[in-house]
Length: 229
Image (tube, rainbow, N blue to C red):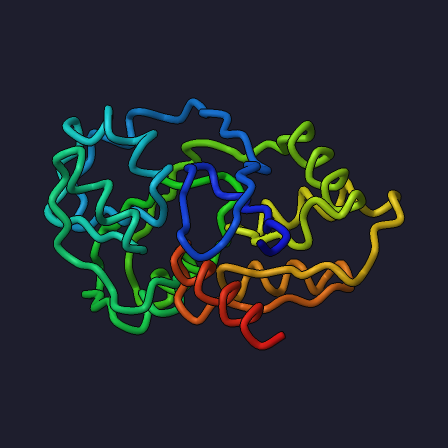
């Protein structure tokens, strides 16, 4: 059996092909926001993550909104699970792919409930297309330090030989903690998408990047990487 890979996403998964250790590197802290923003009419609401749906679902019925968009298959599936119908779902699961496929009318009012640490890309691009965008900082990620230190210990004891990062925040938290711990540079790192890959590179490491920005995409690149050896 091959040495396990550490997976950092918040939800547990199983794989028939890979031995996985599940250690989330992020804890979610809900934030308060100006609920008066819910009193306006919006043409679109965009959910960019499952957590956005999870922490906004109790407010959704208060919202006067015409259409719902979701980025990522897990996000769409969770919307359906909690009774929120999705009207637009891009083939490409990244924010860049969403912008390429999403049609905006001038003056569209769009609300985006998301992480306080979310990239400004989506909001900026929509505003450049003359949409009126309201972003709600719904929650913020915090480092799950205990799990990060456990992951470092597993790597150093050769009980794991790589980490699959499910977000750029997870990568940022890990490498900040590992900076002064003389971590070997020969471990295998995997990134769920381009922003996560670029965050890993900021710390002087490299990673293999999933073609599809999903957990299944991560598992696929892990399997392909190991099969080449």
